[in-house]
Amino acid sequence: MPDKPHGELTTRTLAMPADQNPAGDIFGGWVLSQMDIAAGICSSERAQCRTVTVALDGMNFIRPVKVGDILCVYTEIQAVGNTSLDIHVEAWVQRDRSRNTVKVTEAKFKFVALGVDGRPRQLPAD
Image (cartoon, rainbow, N blue to C red):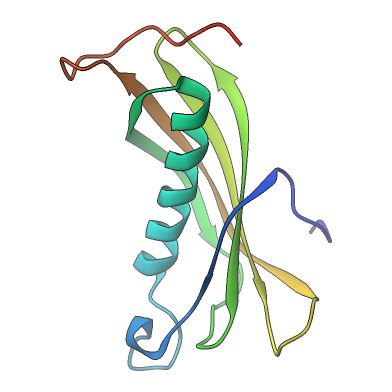
């Protein structure tokens, strides 16, 4: 497992008690939503317009997220098509008030750029 994140730090947020399941771990759906937010920021900045999530591939939870962890989400554009982008997303946590980070999950998100009419639109040149 790599010891440092790939991509650009896109979001950071604190895992709170309201986000935990009965076992005391943070819900996987909360982590997924934070990753989707970060990927959306990354894709809309590249597309320079509204983008929407159309697919998610291969998400595996490696370690649990705990209350008080700082969830750091890193994004990297892997592929750009005519109207779509593939974004690699990694979620890491800072735990116990230290700068040490632990990877908790990763996934690939696919986004499509939309025009004002709500239909797919051509991405601008890089």
